[in-house]
Image (cartoon, rainbow, N blue to C red; front, top):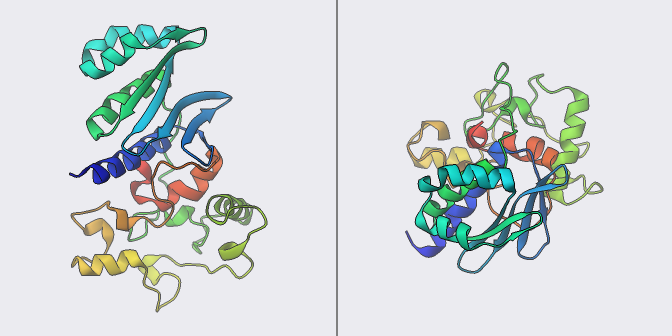
Length: 251
C-alpha cells in the first residue's frame, strides 16, 4: 500500500471510529486542525500534515492510571511517547504521529481510555435499508411514513448545515424536494439509477450489499468519512451523515 493510500485509510478509519463511538461536535479551524468536543471538553485534536496526522491526546490522572495498568498492551512507540510527554496542570499532553493503521489502532485504545463511547445505535425496529446500505427509514427523502413532518424539517436543517453550507441555502431540500419510495420500489422514479447501483451492476451483483467489496468508497450515499477542517455539530453528524453511510459506522 502506498503512502497516500495508507493516509487515506487512516483518515477514513478515524472518522468511522469517532463518529460511530462518540456524540461529539467536530470543530475545524478551516486550515489544519480538527477538534472533537462534547460538553466543553475535548476528546481528541487532530492536526493534518503532509505526510501524517498528529493526534493530540491529553490524559488526566485517572486516565494515566488506566494506561499504566495496561501499558504492556501498547506498542513501544506509544509507551515512549507517553513517557517523554510533559504533564501540565490539566494533564499529560501526548502528540502522536499517525501515518498507518497499526498506529491508529493503538491510538483508538487510548481514546477509549480517555472517554467511554456514548453513541447508541439507531433503533432497528423499523430499519429499512437501501441497496447501498444506508437507512431509508431515517432519510429525509423517504416516503414510507417512518419520518414525521417535524423531524423531516429538522433533518433538512441538518443536511443544509453539512452539505449546503448554511441555513439560508435550501437548495436540494427546498419546497420542491423529491421523495423516494426506496430502492425496492424503484427509488426516486422508475428511471432513476444512482452511481451505487451502476457500480453494483458493473461488479455483477444486484446491489452493493451483495458485493464482496462492500462496504467500499463507492457505496457511500452521503458525506464521506474523511478528516476535515470544517465545523460539523454533533446533531448534524447524527441526522445528516450517519444514516447515509454503509452500516452506520458500525452501529
